[in-house]
Length: 352
Image (cartoon, rainbow, N blue to C red; front, top):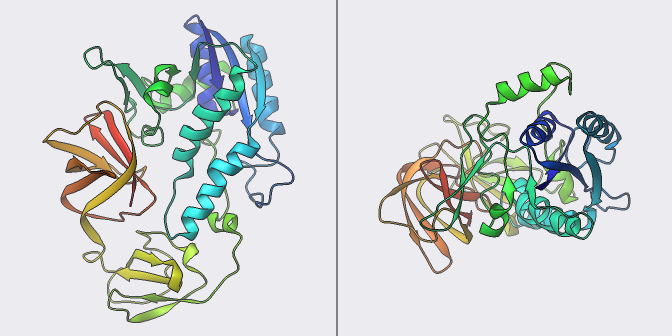
């Protein structure tokens, strides 16, 4: 069976190639290129980010590893679709005062979407695989494919993959899902793919995200919920909901960004107590383990590093509503609310 494997040149995808070969699959590596020279968006300062002009070092490493494993490798230019689907969305969401997650958007729209559509015109393959830490099972009773947390909870990436559709999950493999990062690093070192202590996987941009917005600084106010002015800022787009550090204002208690008002270029902050909420609403929902919610308690994560909070979830006309068992800080419009039943992803929606 032919498996197309997304390869970045990092430890995880390289070891995934080895594991797939060991399992008897016919493997071919694929790398998507997302930078174009005439892009209106600025290049990042960091050379290790996903969105980086020079991929020559990564491609050289991928070529060497593929040669050692006896597999072929190809590149696919996804720069235009990445710009349209990811960068444009990122910019519009930030300018609207939201906090987008470009990795979630890229996975569902580009890496597991447009790139595979392009690949099918070039390469015959049966399954697609990546080096993400997550697992997929199939529920015989419901007939649904279920995205699950990885064995290594500290490295679990199911949050970033939560918008994958049933069709996408049906032909996807995650060979690292039952391994810990330490085990993968040790295997990588034994295979000689990378030097010991090589850095982690790439960041999306590697520079200040606000650079992608291409906006000139504009003086605005930092205020309390009662509109008391505490200080000034260089533009609301330099702030995100839940932010505590770097606010540039003095107060007798720690303050958190609770809302952003783009039309007034205003950033609203509050104390820990005032920044918490017991409910949220989500829209544009992708269902996973189930296509409905039962009348019981789930676990809901509102950001990638969130351990989750017990909550009751109900379907709405727009998507779903969440009622937490305790107040939660940092609920940010634009981020994803991911509903879990144990280690299974039930649904993912954008916070409104």
